[in-house]
Image (tube, rainbow, N blue to C red; front, side, top):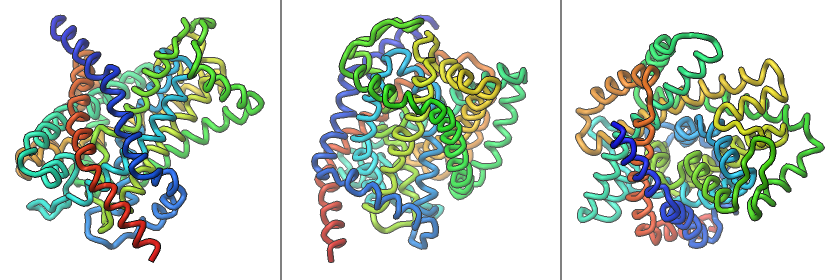
Length: 447
């Protein structure tokens, strides 16, 4: 077991090393340049479009708004609380600047993924709209690339059980046991029953729950964070200066913080930014392919808001709380650092805010990734695999809640990297299609 653990750690270090991070960020920069900053220029219009899309009557399974909420249900997770804290603990406050950079260019990546997902989607035997990297690789690049599509689907179907299921269940069970002394098996059983009530109803029920739960949880968390931020309002300019200065200069050791080089800020900022918003991993377009729309560009515009909301809003709120309260230099890391920050500002209440956020964020991640994994499995084995996959998904939750997930986390980490590679290759090869479709949309908009 120790040999497997060591091997997975080596693979993870290679896959998520400098080359992959440059590849992920580079694709975003390349697409943003090719799109002539279209995602930045049309951000406000995209929010207006999102609001109007709630009652779409086009062909598809769920509204464009529900598609975004479903993708956000999978991306707004423990990474927004524990992931941000880890980035600061390892890379210093400057890591947040590089998270922002990743998000700004990740908007182009997320836009491109959704454009291709809608353009190359299919209708399966049950009449549902299906799509994502495996479909735009197969239909956009042709049968000679089908092996690449199958690779993405295989890695996605397996990786979902790690990052989207067992790790999330374990995070919730651990947090609940620590805060409320409830045994992990009881938490695991409760999560399983709640998940079953949702995912057995398919994408329509997942989207309906996500459309209600995601905005509610995000707004509640942001309001709580804003309370802390406003109570330290006079320190906000200094906090931003610290973030920017630390992004380009070494952060000195302070208190329990051991110091961090500029490379550490870049590395952990980019890595955690990508893990948070999943731009480039290829997961979100699976949800956007089910949207009720006939225009790939309009869905792409809505999809790119996921990166904006996840990283530039929610992650920034967590980061500011950690920095403004001074908790960042305590030596704590992960969820413990976020808990310390909120407890410092709101004694007695802060811990409950973090735990509540972790519980709800992790639960919605389980819902969103169940759909992603199911669609990947369907691509490989057809619709007959849907129900067995859902049942297997439910069985994995209590195992995750009660297990020790070091190896599972590493395996999921490696498989997520393997998911990203086929998707990034496809985005590069299909970039002329993305640019052409966007140009045609802009020309039609002027008519």
